Image (cartoon, rainbow, N blue to C red):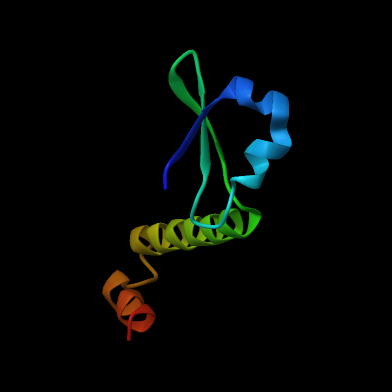
Length: 77
């Protein structure tokens, strides 16, 4: 379920933080526009790990020392 709250809801931050669960972030709006996302720390760790992997794959793809198709084959085989 999508949780959207105005940033002013943080006045009672415990109530807002209780709604944050893995795979269920709380989005905060400011002046009617999306501004912040509160996510579970485990989900954040998974996101940053995946982002690091994507960046390493991009570097390998651009490198003259690696064949991207071989790397992709090794990752997904």
